[in-house]
Amino acid sequence: MTAQPTNLAGIDLRAEIDRLRKEKNAVILAHYYQKPEIQDLADYIGDSLELSRKAAASEADVIAFCGVKFMAETAKILAPEKIVILPELDAGCSLEDACPPDKFRAFREAHPDHIALTYINCSTEVKALSDVIVTSSSAETILAQIPREQKIIFGPDRHLGGYLNRKFDRDMLLWPGVCIVHEAFSETELIKLKAQHPGAPVAAHPECPPHIVDHADYVGSTSGILNYAKTMTGDTLIVATEPHIIHQMELALPAKTFIGAPGADGNCNCNICPYMALNTLEKLYVALRDLSPQIRIEEGLRLQAKKSLDKMMEMASGTVGKGDLGGRG
Ligand code: 13P
Ligand code: SF4
Image (tube, rainbow, N blue to C red):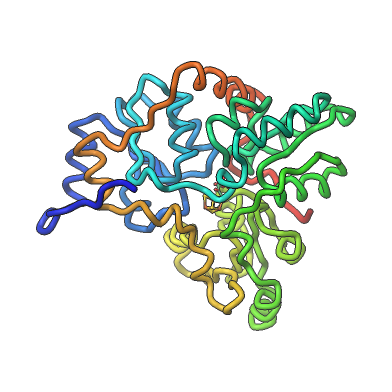
């Protein structure tokens, strides 16, 4: 784990982060699942596709990535000349953990007539073993360009893959990974919550299992869910994704009510991503001050992984973070 910052008492972290950002020509990118205090000082907030695009296009010398490791690695793959720092190197992802590269390689070798369409929530090694990367906001656009007769392996998220299979009547072979955060929503508690708020729509991320997605009025990426909140006509929305995204909803729509979908115990604390939560203002300050921890990727591996990411960028062009997965699976 990254060393815990010490002796930071008395430091105005926000002012210091601001000073360091200018001094080091750094851009701060934050995912919607970051704590509100990090979202509030980021230069850009976005979903995985938007943040990848920002990283690739940035003119900054330093990218301070407030998200999880696969996101910061994606930034480094796309912008190798930049220093990419991640406040907490242990900020991983259960989907990445569920897909060890050696097992993924063996799976691919066992299915030589399949291409690998792979969710961006995976290691650089798995990206290097893949043909095309997708994010939740680009998956539909990309899948539509792949001929129906082409056999496909989809990993590591079996719920996103299953959702795409159902919605587009495909039969992609699914890797058995799940997101521990979206897996924790309870259907029973969601039904109770809907009964307490009759008429309130449910917006869900496609990483949710089918028994949650089946109750959703809208299914899409984090940006897609945010856009749905901005365009809905009602005054209450039930949000079935990591609850820190609600911060942006409350800022944009202070008169509306946003309720996080519950876990099995009836509250939604179990749906806070424990990896995203490892980043703090203190660690961001130290990372900018010391330009450490840095993301480093061996060049041969980076170039191999870049091929599948470049393919995503090419095939996703035109996809804006509007949550192309709109509608039921
Ligand atoms: P988005 O691309 O929708 O932001 O999803 C990223 C993620 O990790 C969701 O759990
Ligand atoms: Fe990974 Fe789930 Fe956390 Fe997203 S919410 S980073 S998929 S563990």
